[in-house]
Length: 273
Figure 1 (cartoon, rainbow, N blue to C red):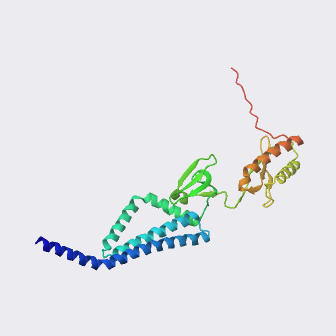
Figure 2 (cartoon, one colour):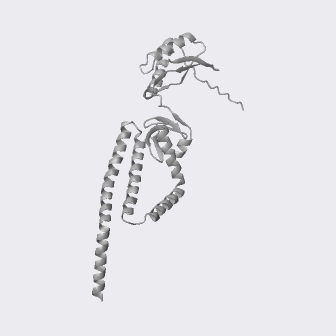
Figure 3 (cartoon, rainbow, N blue to C red):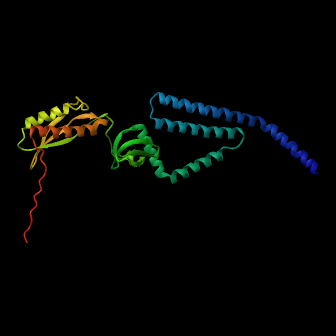
């Protein structure tokens, strides 16, 4: 009886083996060819995006999205070819995706913000921006957050959801910036001579741009001085140097001309008793 059962089991196994062998072989072939095609398609898509100067963060994200989407579709196709029902598998996958989405609402909003930043491009890597109350250079644009480095060399990570919904000031977008300065002189100074001196100082600094033309005008008649607004234009990387050079040369030239740079005078009144 046991021999008959063993022979019957062996025969059934052989029948099943030869019956499913073609499907197994075809599924295996689909798997290997599919993996190769997924790799080729992903690499080709990344190359096309690089040739079209697509943002590196966006091209990497889209490449990964294509890679995993095609892999999931390939796995479903292989499972279906083996004769395994895929309806339950797809339902479980959808339920898992819904559960994950509900539990990661904050992360998904950051993800959506990252996509908006990458697509709209309010700033790029290396830009100097002001956002969410902080200043810094953009070092990395991630899918969920953006990393900037402050002038004090602090690393600041800002969630993309708040960044994409807030005000962003990009100081590097145009490549040049205006340097705003206030120079004060005494009331006894020759105003025309001050203007000429300031104009000569600005023209003597190589980093100052000829266009747009620098702006020099009187801004205010203060209690102890006359304020001149001085606004030359320069490239982003020369802002601090231009500012320093203007102040240094103003001090030297004003000393030569005998003009004082006024400063507030505090008078202390002592009470008797």
